[in-house]
Amino acid sequence: MLRPIKILIETNLFIAFAAVAFMLANAVLLDIPFTTLSYLSLQIFFSTWFVYQISRWVYYKKGVYTNKEELVVQWFEKYPLFNQITIYGSGILALGFTFFLQWKTILVLCFAGGISVLYPIPLLKPFGISTRLRDFPFVKIFLIALVWSLTSVVLPALENNINLLERRDVLVVQAAQFVYIMFITLPFDINDAQVDKASGIKTIPSVFGIRFSKISALFLGILYAFMLLFIFMLENWRSINDIYLTEATILLLWFLLILLQGYTFFKSDKVTKWWIKIVYDGSMLLYFVIVFFTKK
Image 1 (cartoon, rainbow, N blue to C red):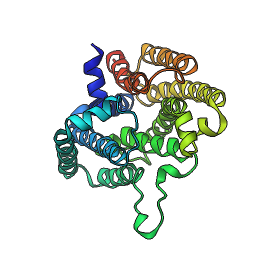
Image 2: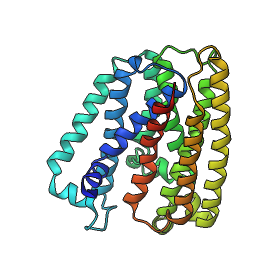
Image 3: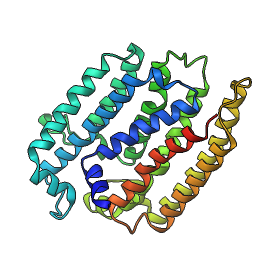
Image 4: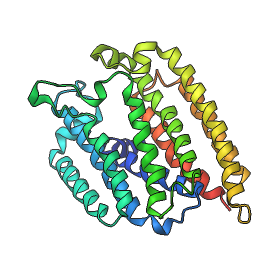
């Protein structure tokens, strides 16, 4: 049963579905109708797939994957044509669906997409500078949180013609999801701590240690729990005549946080990378299930 999940993860389809699910979950939090988000959902799916596929391909070509037993290496070596088709195909489809979006959405999308594409690529290498965005100390987790929070919160708001100056709750949710993405990204760095330390990549775990990082994750989780409570009260106050968020939503999301926190403390530095992806990327899928099926 785990083989199909592994294939979804290694082909980056899992994270593409998770990206759409997390965006739709935030649409529920902000009471944005799904009917306005069809093209954006397709754009996010294919752009996420493209970014992760091309990043993996670049790392593979550069020999970053040294373990030939890794499924991603076997996949690239066994199906090189498939991977090239998915890279070009997802890129073309992502670009195509972009033209169906609002111009404000496109501007923010270009900003977020630019960070995502430039993150693993040393664009200044012809000038003798091989530094990539990911090489700057501690910047990785903040860039990921920024891109994902913009994509999952600000984009659906803009696509629904929401004025961010009038609906400041959008920025509150965006700030909260920035914290949540940091919370679920830190375990990836904890899991990679030894590899990052050996390769000179300065992340929080590789510099300050795993224990410090787990405590930081605990702080982020607690902070996010309070931010969720504020969002719950803010959104229901804003729509006082048509309350749509329920107590079950907040309680189940808190329970999800507790489970994730426990996994971070007891498993994040001991399990294989694909388990980290199942748990933390999968949490975005579960997040959507919770908010969608508990809303009024």
